[in-house]
Length: 198
Image (tube, rainbow, N blue to C red; front, side):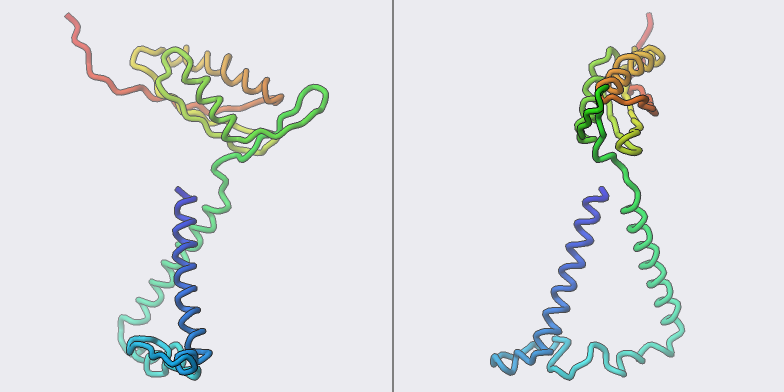
């Protein structure tokens, strides 16, 4: 979701800057007069000496009681949105890559998404697991796994958790040459209708 928000924000900012910059450049270089075309009446700039906001425009609302609270609220909202966006950029939701090393010290890099896909496939192959989602966090030399399992109605959670730890996580840890692979597992049960007992 963050990637989509980033793309939309960058696209909107780019369009606004392009439109305003084009309008300023067009009037600042006096291109309508040089190239012999007119600008519409709503066009904000009509010549190289025009200003963005006239003195009358800047002072129009100053004496209104709602003006300064509205300005402060708008700037505060813009500041909060900018801080949220900045903090969202700094938070890393996914581990991009994992450093894999063997006993002889040979190192390689594996994409974090590839390891997540393997963890999901191995977990879904376990009896009683309907669906699995995996996410890696932490550092590339010390990843942490976060898994979510959707269990079938007849699955024993303790058994599924034991097999996940003993088979899936242990195999992933050994394959990646990691000393340890801590994991947080969230279990949910698939919804089903109550069965009638006769």
